Length: 310
Image 1 (cartoon, one colour):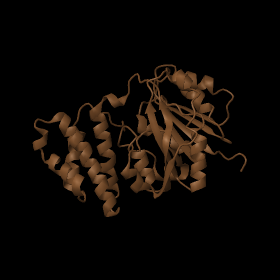
Image 2 (tube, rainbow, N blue to C red; image 1 turned 180 degrees about the horizontal axis):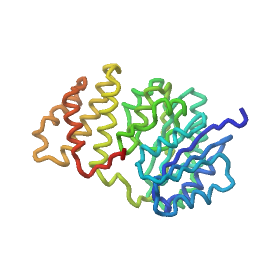
Image 3 (cartoon, rainbow, N blue to C red; image 1 turned 30 degrees about the horizontal axis):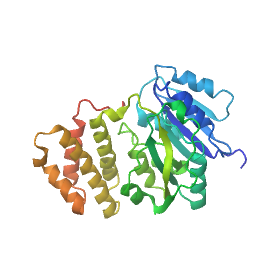
Image 4 (cartoon, rainbow, N blue to C red; image 1 turned 120 degrees about the vertical axis):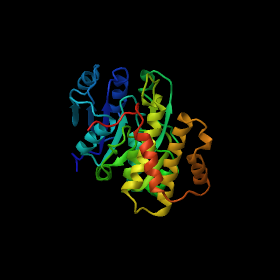
């Protein structure tokens, strides 16, 4: 259909006025799209982020701006945008990520040609000013891999940066991000891959990260917590998954917990998790649910980890 939206872009926003002019220039000038949709979900920014978005999207069709009045966190806000998406595919981005101008077009072409519900690429931390990245394109001769089994593929690699393209009906069926986990990076690919048929990994940068002024990556315990919780909840919510998948999920959970213990415990190499972690590297066992819940409780006791406000 002529008026069908081909891609919905969903951007979460929180105090990113420094980045937004360049991010929006690259986003609004994505090449080769027939009828894109732009969804912006603000989480109560205190700077001029929303004003910049309103000004730069004047006269552009298919724009939705959600200026919320309560700060709820990244996962809640990305889900708000996902629920509103009307395109055949949805591409998500952080408000400090810049897309190469032809990246969505290339991802969409691969999704259609290969009947893939998920398309990913690599990202690069450039250290450059946002204005230096507004006019970048992908490499002319990039390569890619296609796999039919999306979940096993996600569990065999690292798919944790925003910028992915996912069929909207798959993303909405999955429920988007797990709102029990503050940062969405780990949970979205896991949950979408449960329902996706076919996944493409592009071996080229589809996201360019400008110099960073500060983000949650500085809180390493937050990252350990959110990574662990994403895998923990996948196990607890889906106990009937095939054994090899459950083993991989459990190995990832053990890895996140071990990283946490190394940072916080005295004599960490004498802790039981170290030996469990070593065993998982050689031949990962099926999840020990009692021990999984024990690890979960240790994380839930952490005082300086952000969680979703109910």
